[in-house]
Structure formats: structure tokens, C-alpha cells
Length: 101
Image (cartoon, rainbow, N blue to C red; front, side, top):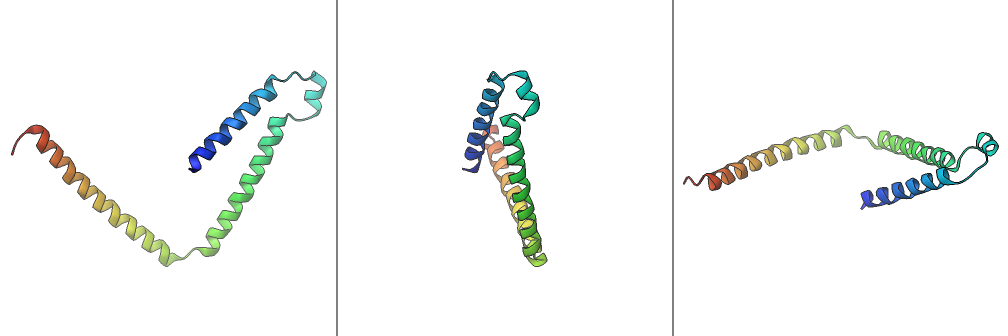
């Protein structure tokens, strides 16, 4: 669902960018004031940096080494299990395709 919102936001910014580029603006006004797209980009980058800093601060504040170890252990065990079952399924598919009993 998050990807869908990201795509919609990207398309809106893309359309706004083309609209700003396509608008007829006298040369002297272009040099004196930043374009709308530049202002939007600076604003979004500012929001992004603020959100990123807040997330990093929250992560550092709530970081627990024991939880990190448990997550790493669960990841290791689950990838080992998935690898094992993927190997079993691959062997079964090859045996069905080869026709040998």
C-alpha cells in the first residue's frame, strides 16, 4: 500500500514539474525567483530530513541489544529453513520432470 502512495506522489510531482517547465515565464522573473518545482523539492527534502532524523533518534533511543540478537537469530533460522524446503521442492520438481521413480 505504501508503494502505491509513493507512486501517486511521484506522478503528481512529475506532472507538476512538467507544468512548471511548460509555463511561459519572462526571463527576468526566472532569474530572480526560484521555480515552484525547486521550492517543492526543497520543502520535501526538508520534511524528509526531519523525518529521517526523528526515526534515527527513536531507533537509537529504543535500541535493545538483546532484541537485536533475537532478530538476527530468528532471521538465521528462518533462512536456513526456507533454503532447506526450497531444496526439497526443487528435488521434487526435478524428479517429476525427469520421470524417474
